[in-house]
Amino acid sequence: MIFIEIVKMNNDVNKKLLHKGVKPTSMRQLVYEVLDKQKKALNLYEIEQQFDNVDRSTIFRTLKTFQDNCVIHRIDDGTGAVKYALCDENCTCHLGDLHIHFLCIKCGQTHCLKDMPIPKMDLPNGFLFKSANFVVKGTCPKCS
Amino acid sequence: MIFIEIVKMNNDVNKKLLHKGVKPTSMRQLVYEVLDKQKKALNLYEIEQQFDNVDRSTIFRTLKTFQDNCVIHRIDDGTGAVKYALCDENCTCHLGDLHIHFLCIKCGQTHCLKDMPIPKMDLPNGFLFKSANFVVKGTCPKCS
DNA sequence: AATTGAATGCAACAGTATTGCAAAGATTTC
DNA sequence: GAAATCTTTGCAATACTGTTGCATTCAATT
Ligand SMILES: [Mn+2]
Ligand SMILES: [Mn+2]
Ligand SMILES: [Zn+2]
Ligand SMILES: [Zn+2]
Image 1 (spheres, each protein chain N blue to C red):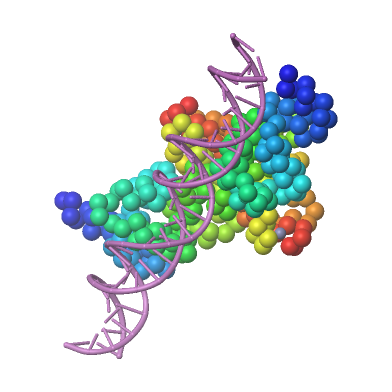
Image 2 (cartoon, rainbow over the protein chains, first blue to last red; image 1 turned 90 degrees about the horizontal axis):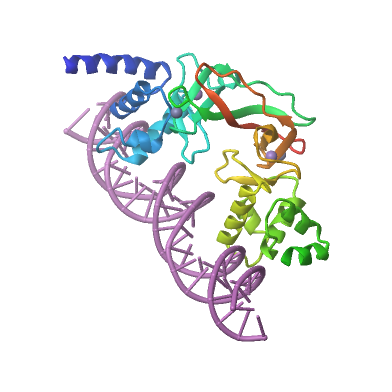
């Protein structure tokens, strides 16, 4: 039954949120589930559209909490709105977890390429590498 | 003919604009000079502040014209406002001209690393590489 | 049950980007 | 050179995204 399924899912999500140190409110569960269902990264407004009557600022603050606790990472793909995707369970949101993102210029979808770490570059003298944002743009498998 | 008159003026900026196919109005000359004087990339509001009584939308449209004609390239460094920097004289704004940009997290300045081309990555099956935005963040020589 | 602190909803606001339209300026046509 | 035409500029308004103040609701604790 659908009710039982939802309770099961919630339990699973609860565990994952607790594992990251986030108190699992119902709002947070729902936002987590929305992100979990998607293969692509979503922005604030796309997440908002998944709900009927949830306030934007609540989702915004939920996403803030998630970022602070490495539940999600933000993706700045240049489309104007920051997108978000779930982190791996063992992600620490540090240098080693950085990966390339791919923006499809046809369908607009943004994907994590989690097995493509951002290459460390030899910078000119005096420049110190702390972090990076590497977005590759082109056409995705669906649109190629 | 207007072009001959301007060439007669023997103005360096005019020549550069004409070389890119942009009619050199005084506004465009001034914006070009502002960008030329700087070593760092500037956003719309920083450019606006270099003038006393020039409208933002005029600068905006000047920058649009410059982009359309490969006079400048836009830099999306995640700071919220797009920055702009002059292209090289022989730049065609295509793949080969792409380079890494560096954002200093202390002073906020963004630099073109023109001798650091964006590395071509082997993407997963079905993904086609068309373009990329690679911003490295850290501390610049002044701030390190 | 009362107290406290956290989460949520509503509304307002801030920052950046963009557009419509009319005035001013430049170029071409006659 | 005057009129017609096209381009550029200035002003104002607007769109879009992100963020915050504050009151209310909810949850945990005493
Ligand atoms: Mn990712
Ligand atoms: Mn550059
Ligand atoms: Zn696509
Ligand atoms: Zn610096």
